Length: 74
Image (tube, rainbow, N blue to C red; front, side, top):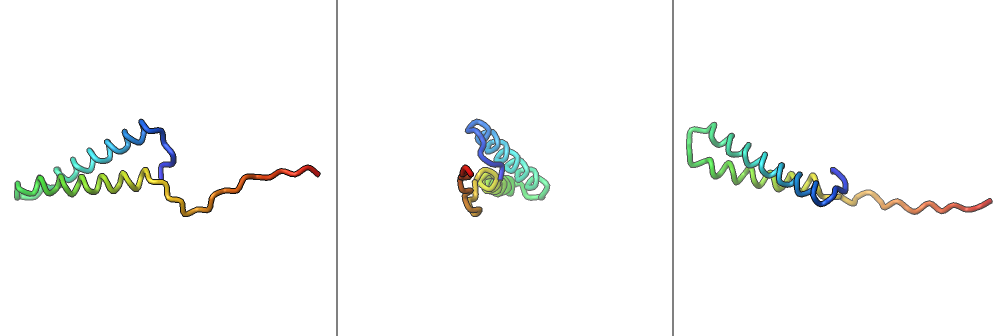
């Protein structure tokens, strides 16, 4: 979805997405009264972060490839 990014930017996007989702999972688990759920929330957040990273950085090739333009002289 983000298009072809340089390797450094792909790594930055991956790290930020995984950290944000893991932190959101931990925060959501802290809101519940059971402290044992913190590790579950972090795991779910980590899994969602990996999934979102894949969806953000994967290039789907459903569209047909563009053909090179052939110019002819008249």
